[in-house]
Image (cartoon, rainbow, N blue to C red):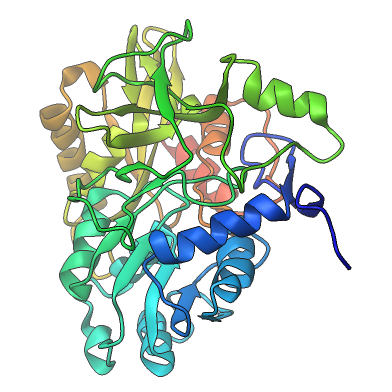
Length: 404
């Protein structure tokens, strides 16, 4: 049945790590144009090739790049039900690529951190033929430089960190393989895609200079493919995205643009913590923790402090096979942050945990962890992968004299 380009195609509720989920509306025409364009020009994939988005059909990556994008472009799309590890082992992704002649894989950095934790030397990779494989794309959670470099070393193909949101429906910023790859800067998802004009604003809504942290915004109008509104909530749409910085869409992400126009997304605006008047990025601290050879993945939150307002607390998951005392590694991590970021970070607490709480799409639930640490009321987000992990986090924090 014919529909108008502006008719709604689907409603997708955002992961809701920040509260009540919002029903993102996607239209037909703009969505189709943006996805078709991105398959060739951004991902560098040709019709007839095999494209694999290792995601869930219930998330925006699944909607955009399992169901619609590859099929609009004439590609084979793979639907994969399983984890990157344990189904049956950390070579599961390599098997799928080898068996089906995948040219491009798009997944979350969390998946690669899990593989790196289980198989740090990528021994399982040697069993498979990856001669068809051309590129790995990572999005959904900040791709720490250490994970990107590890993936580059083992796969010897371009590893493209890119950044977007449920609301935008397709990449806001990335390295466009199809148009011609730009120089890689580890830690940056590179530059805005056509149709996106990015700026970084201070709390007064004024544009800041290069390399200055602030709120990342997109100048209106939004390009094709982005949400026209929230389902039956036009006012909430304006309030959530358009009212804070008039003339701009507020991404709720924080970061900076460098002198070359590369965007650096350092975390959610809520993840910028105020330590004794200094605005510090938890993403920057996570980058330092992840660089330690024993650390598989990590998360940093700000915990309430009577003297400094907030102090950072780092949670780390160690790589499999690490046989050193966690206390030794924790002390090294505290020293490493002091060395790389400085005493101003007031980073004194690193805590080893068995696993981190995440949504099913791989986003770490830092906001809920912070509420537990601060002793504030909290509820289990509907999108959590395993609710038991929050109990484990609470137990570990109480053992350290935190959690209210």
